[in-house]
Length: 121
Image (cartoon, rainbow, N blue to C red):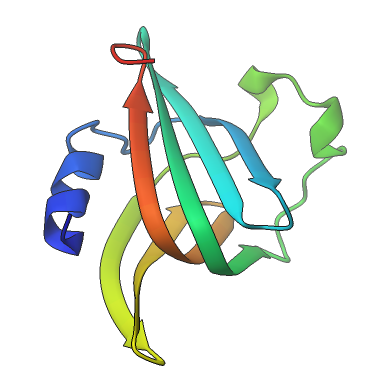
């Protein structure tokens, strides 16, 4: 799937301002999962075969307490923008994904991106 097609699929979930309820980095950062809910629809984006993953939290944002102690309604992370592109490095094609979920920004380079919703979980 091209980056343009993948961007359209990701945008089709109308993620803007959705609260992120789950972000997990697995298998030594080889897979990253991000989950959010909109009304009764739960959506998961899974980044597979990751080669670069940058998590950049706004330094001036006071979390007030450790995130692991927060309930989902207390989590301060809301999706603002997701930008998918492709890059070729060392003759390898990667998807690049920039996610603004203020106060956290992510940049992920991966081989594949899967999307799931409660309609197809």
